[in-house]
Image 1 (spheres, rainbow, N blue to C red):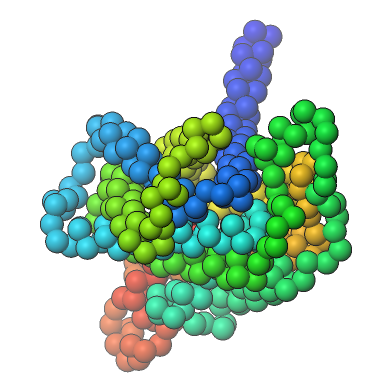
Image 2: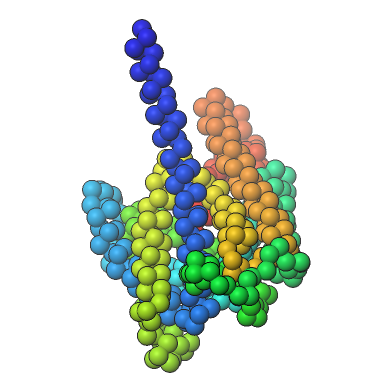
Length: 399
């Protein structure tokens, strides 16, 4: 009996340990994302064009992702529609345009004008922007009697107030950047990871560019949900629109934004090439696989709950790196945006509970109620309109 008890205790410990793996993986993903963002800020500040960085990063990511997607779905047997048709090509073209070409160039251009803490703050407004876009596209019904709708509205207002504070109020410095670094280790830290520099930063313009990028991604998210329904092999869809988006970005950058050929030459003696390789492999394969794995284990809303961890990491780096500056206004504003973020996500959870409850009530109503007793009910009455679909496509707020 003692041996059996020890075995059961060991199994429970292993189960609890396995439960912690998704949590640790998601926290690690957010930390790595912030590190790469700060590193990208450093490289762009040192002279690399953000448009060139986007093209090279996504080109390499597409090279990694295309063969990996076929390996990832090698055992999948689905009844999806034929891939090579006009409908699929138009969807892939729009996904590349709204998921890579426009938002990525806007995002890294906005990063060059602001700082990683602003990137975090604007990233947390994504559920609010998605909610507003769904109202404009009429995919979300305006129902002020619904508690989940009221919660989302309140969270959206709080998020927008916090984002406005981040943009318009910097406040006093928490820690200023070091003007001179004499120690070799500190000099290396300044070379590889800087949070911001003494160069003028156009935070308002940078924040607006980041907000526009998030709005574009919200539209991409809606389009992606419909595409995955028709073509459920997610990684293949991602590899295709990544390739198309890379070609679009390359054409626009080479013909309009970055016509100087010298800007396309990488400095092999710097960290530019290493950053491109790490960003392409991490963003294209590692983070995507971890997000898919966690969503399958914990549900679609598990991954977005970890976005505010990026603020924590950005604040830690902002107060610890010797070449960094951080302001009270940006931190307080980002914290307010984070509260709005969680409020919107809470509203989304309440919405799912309401949908589940209504679905169960509808099933019970269909089984227990004889149809002839309700012939005189008005079809416009929401309480009895059981033919109206209650479950709408799930929005994925992952970026």
